[in-house]
Amino acid sequence: MEIKQSALSNKSPFDCANLAEWEKRSQIFGTDPKGVLFKGLPDIFNEHIHNWQLKGILAEIAINTEEIRILDIGCGYGRISVPVLQTLPRAKITGIDISQNYVDLFRQNTGQDAFVSFVEDIGSDLGLFDYIICVTVLMYIEDGNLENTFKNILNNLKKKGKLLLIEPSSSGTPFQTCFGLLSLIKINNKSAATGMGGNSFKYTSLRNIIINSGARILKEYRLPVTTLFFLFIYVFTRTLPAPGRFLLQMISKMDEFLKFTKLPSIYVFYVIEK
Image 1 (tube, rainbow, N blue to C red):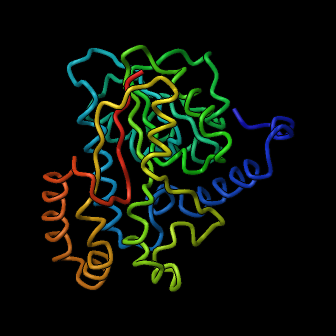
Image 2 (cartoon, one colour):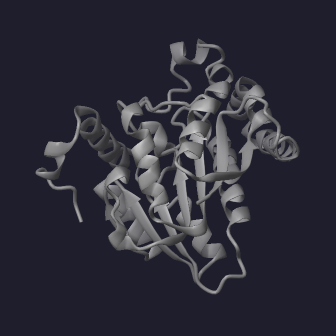
């Protein structure tokens, strides 16, 4: 299912540009995680971020359930869904992405259904889901559409189901960019190969959208140590990749210990109940 040109007539220039850039990114990167994570980071650093996201998601999904339905919004090529299926082979996962190429890759990689759609246009025909995975999707939604988009996501969640939401936090931006230095030399530009940028959220702004929708935040996880030492980790893993893996193992343990603190973080992981 493709997004027809006629359907785009009702979309803003922002949405149309978003679609074009994500299709371009999918063509450039394919199944390379840099297409959906950070283009400028060493592979092992991106792997560290991916593992943090995946570990948190798997920790929230009940593994003793016979069959569960999962909606992966912004599914990409299946970066999250493939390892979820390896852990939960009986799960039924439906992918949603605005990139036709990513949807095709998701189907190939997972053997599951996937559809091309803007997140705000997901209809009720897909049914309700036990879990919805939504990783760095809202950051690409126009501010004026955020509240309605979030409510539309919740409409596809079962009562007492869980929305697993990960979005960038503005609290981590100064450390991620070394207070503007990295943006000048473009080594940390997430979208250097395309025109994509995306927003980061102030803690209260995204939290208010969640609460005002009638949802309940059960937990919040952060990545504080990775954030505070972002530049050091970047330099170390780029120059010394082998010992960099050991460093990242230590960082992961410290992040796990401090994950519930309100320290700055490049991402906040919300566990949300309808």
